[in-house]
Amino acid sequence: MNNLKTTKLNKIIDKVVSNIYLLMTLISASFMLIIIIFILFKGLSPFMSNYQYGVVNFLDFLFGTQYRPDMGIYGVGFIIINTLVSALLALSIAFPISVLTALFVVKIAPQRLSEFMKVVIDLLASIPSIVYGVFAAGIITKFTMTIASMLGVQTYGGTSLLSVVILLAIMIFPTITSISISSISSVSEDLQHASLALGATKVQTNFKVVLLSAKQGIFAGAILGVGRAFGEATAVSMVAGNKMFGPTFGLFNTTRTLTSTMIAGLKETSGLDYDIRFSIGLVLLIIILITNFGLNFIKNKVGKTHEKN
Amino acid sequence: MNKLFSVSDVNLSYGDKHVLKDINIDLYKNKVTAFIGPSGCGKSTFLRCFNRMNDLIDSCKIDGTILMENKDIYNKKYDVVDLRTNVGMVFQKPNPFMMSIYENVAYGLKCSGIKDKKVLKQRVINALKQAALYDEVSTRLNDSALSLSGGQQQRLCIARAIAMKPEVILMDEPTSALDPIATAKIEELIEELKKDFTIIIVTHSMHQASRISDYTAFFLNGEIVEYDITKNIFQNPKDIRCENYITGRFG
Image (cartoon, rainbow over all chains, first blue to last red; front, side, top):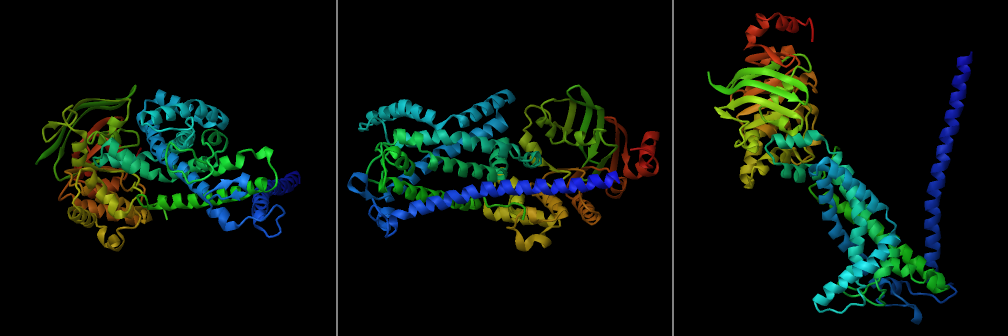
């Protein structure tokens, strides 16, 4: 009798708990939904005919090459290009360094060094972006200035595309590295033994078998990294220079990214100049989405996926 | 009969654990030699001495000499990459790479520096044929190796090994993860392969050893208790421990 009672009770508890899980899931999912709806609503409003602060032409906004709030011109086309250029340049610097670092930490470094490196990388990942920002403003800009003056180029106190790229590369390095480390360490020993037993050297094994097998995780790291590069506002706005027209391709020129545009003077403005930042946020979301698709596409092309089907 | 390996006074330990004790044995060319014995008796460890896979374990220490065609394979001048190209290995669990069927077989060849696509293709196809897999996969060489069944994967691993044209193939319980039908196929294949290769196989199955091998060595606690022609071992074992093991009284 007693036994039957507890079974019944357990069943009720099971049901209650699983409903609590469902509730939690719904709450977190609804945050996502609320944010998207809010940004969509706010971000699209400047393009609607009934907008109170003067309608902005959507195409001018999307393809414009000038961003002059003082003249009421809001074009983000060049800013989109700047953002892509800076993030992808940063990725192309950070990605090889990160992957090779991860390979070194997991496969080559002696255990003590490897443990130490893992701690360092985790610490790097947890440094707040504002700290990276002051570092960039204080050190990286000086470095850029020095290089520029060696090449005989003028800079605006070092604020430049190059500074942004270096800063972002440093910031996304720990993200990509730590994810690559965990994915490289989970490559099965069997595969490495198989490769070595076929007379492959350790280097061949690491590059052809280990990296290939860890590809999924490494690309997940790259996607997170590039997401961070796109999304970084605080630190970037400290070294970008916020140029008002563009796009910027010269490494020593000032630049302007979507995030630095959104954050600049946010608290001191209102009306259209305030609302347009939501439109830029919307553009940023879409760009991140497209880039993720792009990276996934590249992933499937590299060394062909032969996962279990 | 041609001696291929000549092993004398081999002792091997992992840290404090003495795994192989005073091993002395000669292995013959183009024969199948089976290593049998209870789990943990050192037979797999011994197998890995022939292609120096034990080198990968830091705590592993090995003394004594293993001569392959009168050359000491543990000599510092002996290149371990050359050794492993010459002594292929098939593992307990099929372990194809996350590549296509074709690329799996071509992998070792490419690593050894063969770049000519025609040569590669010919050797891949020959190896697949030799491993009795070609007919099953000829139309889908570019499919993932992981889409094959377990038995096919193991034959692919054999193809991968024989593509290197090694002299010896080491097999570490190659059928223990396979069903009876796939096992029978692999055993048939071994029968074919011994014309061209010397095969050393570790197995837990008495029947397998008696079916496919020419010589059998019985291991117990890191020693070779008895080594003879397979027929003698199974029909007329000299050592009582060997007889007990073969008749199933322990192990």
